[in-house]
Amino acid sequence: MAKTRSAARPAGRRQSSLRRRLLAVLLLAALIAGGFGWWKARTWLPDRKDYPVQGVWLSDDNGAVDWRLLRAAGADFAYLTASEGTSTRDMAFADGVAAARARGMQAGAVHVYDLCAPADAQAANFVTLVPRDKDMLPPAIRIDISSRTCPEVPGEAQMQSELTTFLNQVEKHAEKPVILMVSRSIEKEFHLAARIDRNIWVEQDFIEPSYAGRPWVMWTASSRLRLNAAATPLHWVVVQQ
Image (cartoon, rainbow, N blue to C red; front, side):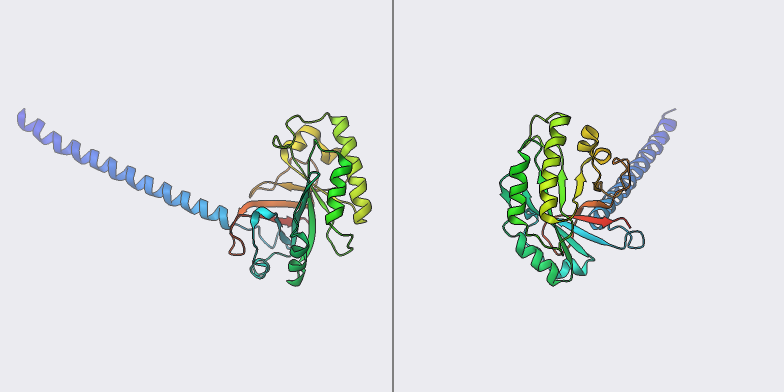
């Protein structure tokens, strides 16, 4: 009996060793797959065959941009965040537009709309900074629910009245309709895509979204693209044709 127990113990140790090796191999495979997924998320771009026109949405959070490298990466246009709410402005906006155009890119302005701020003051903030320019892309209005600037979201009637006032003033200045850049949360709350007849800009990393409930014109397909053109992740945008 002693010999039988003595023989059994090495076999058990061998099985335990095999299990540990198998677990190590599986862990290594998971790490490799995770690393590849992380790398892919940072470098992925939509296929040009599906979306021939592509570009970028920038804000001052992106810091300095190498426009030559951005153009070389395939950016046909750049939307630059010009203003936010009633008082925040990017004073480098004009330089950004000039730099984009110097590289053969079209340029447009974004206003980040504050649901709690007066529409007139927001429109004034935008039109003070962004000139009337027929060569500019249509203004894009970023609308989201932000607890930072608007802890208590206004009612539907008040929101729509204020937004309509804002859009009328901005469109009179730009002499063209705006594009509504609607988040999933704002669309769920107010159904703006159905209520306001404007082109829609949607957002969702990697997978084409459907939350607007109707065809969109622009899509932020990645909010984490890493390019040598900037030190921070970029928002990469495609156009539906």
